[in-house]
Amino acid sequence: MNMKKLATLVSAVALTATFSANVLAKDTIALVVSTLNNPFFVSMKEGAQKEADKLGYTLVVLDSQNNPAKELANVQDLTVRGTKLMLINPTDSDAVGNAIMMANQAKIPVITLDRVATKGEVVSHVASDNVFGGKMAGDFIAKKLGNGAKVIQLEGIAGTSAARERGEGFKKSQESNKFDLLASQPADFDRTKGLNVMQNLLTAHPTVQAVFAQNDEMALGAMRALQTAGKSDVLVVGFDGTDDGIKAVESGRMAATVAQLPDQIGAIGVETADKVLKGEKVQAIIPVDLKLVVKQ
Image 1 (cartoon, rainbow, N blue to C red):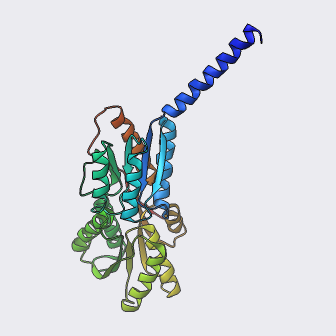
Image 2: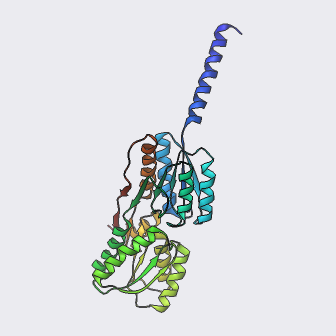
Image 3: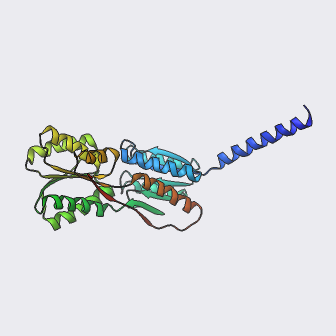
């Protein structure tokens, strides 16, 4: 091999080694998500992934499957994987505390997304104003049906800040608009449970005029129950602004949804992580916009 060819080969090997080193040098951040069996959190993950790619981070995504024990195991796993920062979307605001304290002990910064944590040290919390959104939903029902409307509320997973705060906002509207709250029962943010719970509640409360479901999945389940029962005049309002929820509004089947921007929550979470890892100061609470989606 002549010297010129050898020099070219050495240069190519050096370039490959540099490229490999740069790839390996990419910082890893993690997203521990409550469940990927919900389109809202899938959108959140996609927004986080897009921003991580843009900023040059490796993003590891772990699904807690709505199980606090699985969540704890995920965080434990990440503490030994060279993770620089964790984005955690809690399964439960109280139960997640143990996982966050584990990350704290490992000196790994934590940012919470969508749901707060009641224990442990968190650098920042990125979320929509769920209280305001719950009130927005109630005020829309009052605008359409007037004071004293007969309403059923489908609640999310007990123990999550999203369910608690959306319920709190709806209660404010309920009190000011004097709703006749016929029933308020959990359906765990799940479409099938929304269907089943609504079927049972319809038997007990056939005079219902409106349903506020604390997420679109439960709203879509409730709509199926109402359709089966032949009740086409009941106003249904959801929350989240998922693709299926917005399609249901645009087709006129659902009256409205309070749209969060889950992809933005994920993206802003990664953007905030980037600032934290660069030593920049970040806000303790970073609000993400909400909007009421109605048929145009």
